[in-house]
Length: 266
Length: 167
Ligand SMILES: Cc1cc2nc3c(=O)[nH]c(=O)nc-3n(C[C@H](O)[C@H](O)[C@H](O)COP(=O)(O)OP(=O)(O)OC[C@H]3O[C@@H](n4cnc5c(N)ncnc54)[C@H](O)[C@@H]3O)c2cc1C
Ligand code: FES
Ligand code: FES
Image 1 (cartoon, rainbow over the protein chains, first blue to last red):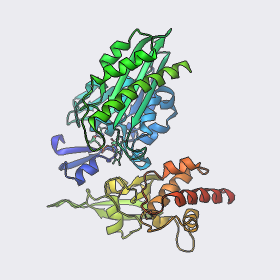
Image 2 (cartoon, rainbow over the protein chains, first blue to last red):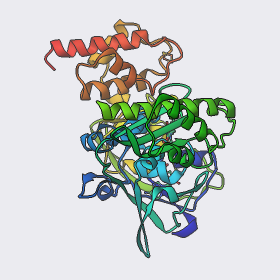
Image 3 (cartoon, protein in one colour):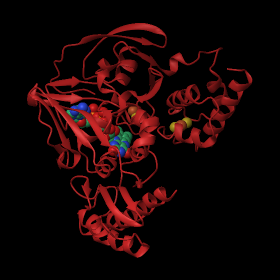
Image 4 (cartoon, rainbow over the protein chains, first blue to last red):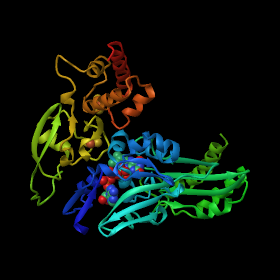
């Protein structure tokens, strides 16, 4: 269909875009009946999630709870029950909002995305997927078909936290997902992902590098949360000011690291 | 939703509405709420914000609560839709409807159809919800009148009555 066509899955974004005339495609391609893209299953190396899985399905999935609970935690905080019953994970990612709640946990978990087009299939790390606000590497003849989430090594903990204006209904002012692997008190690996603080969801790589091979003391974590601030470029909008976003980012980075560590110790 | 210069061809869709099969010709860019209200004349489903923010348009699609203002009508082809008109009828109200009346959970009534359907989806899934679960279940439905307390009490009471009746 090329540029004249617009893919629609759950429609929670697309229908609003149509009403507000942000888009006026000649054709809508409704993929929501492709039941073969609605699954969550365990493979040898990773958990695969079909792109048409709804947030409700992900939130309630025992496999997600066991293998990638921060994705379930984020899905359970999206919009309202009605939105979660309709909205899909594929739509959340392909829409590429800086605030997309499923993006940060998937970044922190090192997920890959399977994209399928008329000329074949490619699997890309999620880090390379987002280009700008509402812009991804998806070609107009491609669909996002699967999300692949690798299993974390032993002694790994994870946490997701979101601040919105209210619990239900609202997009994130900031959301942060962190995974951390600790052996004998030393941080072996850490991924810190932040949403709604830059044109795309991002990783705080300087903060991550600072923490690697260190003992995760309170003061060290605090320093890392300050380093993370250098890596974000939040804007002021209807939901919050840039300064507020900076303050909240610092706090959420600190809290998610701590929560992830606590999870290992439990 | 009306688009300017709109010469779209109508397509026939067939679905089960409140237990009965219906067939209707729709423009593919019409939302379900508009088909229900303007074509099928079922005005129990309300349209408030038309943007997925208020919950007045909530209906059950295959048993799950959804916003009918965000659903393009062709999507419900071959599926099952329940609106407030299918919940109970005068003289034979649904326990939730009875409880809403007794607890004064209705003031202007605009949010009520959506509230009742969100509550039904909850009780179908979780027959004995906690207060917190009730609050979560209706968090996608705004009410400008009641302050929610009576609505929450009514839903909890309806759940209790169902339990007593062994439903
Ligand atoms: C009231 C309300 C509250 C919301 N709250 C939140 C929130 O708290 N957090 C949050 O992150 N989002 C929120 N959203 C946004 C939205 O609901 C989610 O992003 C949802 O996951 C989008 O999925 P969808 O299936 O409805 O997407 P659609 O609207 O169907 O599609 C969105 C975009 O993705 C493209 N697309 C969809 N599927 C694919 C695919 N498989 N391959 C390629 N392209 C595809 C479409 O072409 C379109 O550009 C909210 C929306 C509303 C209306
Ligand atoms: S009219 Fe659909 S949510 Fe308000
Ligand atoms: S009774 Fe008036 S909005 Fe709820």
